[in-house]
Every structure is written in structure tokens, then in C-alpha cells.
Image (cartoon, rainbow, N blue to C red; front, side, top):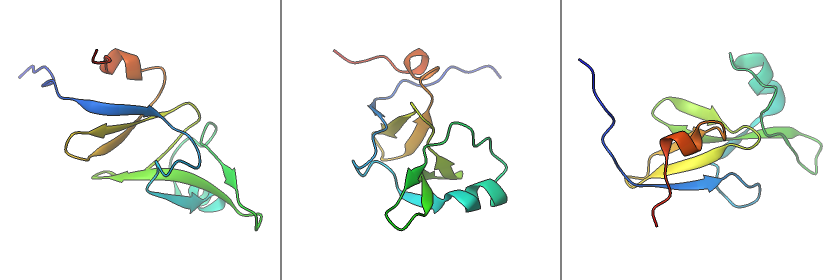
Length: 96
């Protein structure tokens, strides 16, 4: 069955460090050694103790790591998503 996506409103924010937009952080070496994801463009933050962490959001699929230039999408029901700059404005249109 072919379907179209039901329209809904969402808040769309360009990810910024230090704004509390993420749900947590994972150590960089754990992301690289334990994950099956491409790590080239992930946001990496060096902490004062020298550890490097990657921010993520949580949703029903688990931890979704945030890449450089990604947007955080928060649906009206509070569900969060990460969307790349290459797709965000094809999927979302600003409400005037």
C-alpha cells in the first residue's frame, strides 16, 4: 500500500553546543569501537579532562549521534529526531 506522510508540526533547530539540545554524550572511543556508524562528520567535544565525547538524542531507535550541521527536530509529542542539512528543508517547511 502506498501512503503519504500525515502533516504535523515540529520545532526545527540547528544543533548548537552548550544549549542543552542533546540528551547525553558518549565517549568518542566508545562510538568508534562499539558502533556500526560512519563517524567522519560526528560532532566531537573535548572536555577539560581531555576526554572527547559525541552528543546524541534518544528516541525509540536508541541513541542517534549528532553530526556537524545537523538539525534537531522535536515533534509536538516530544519525540526527537536528527536530520541532516541536506534533507531538512525538503521535509520541513517554515510556518509563517
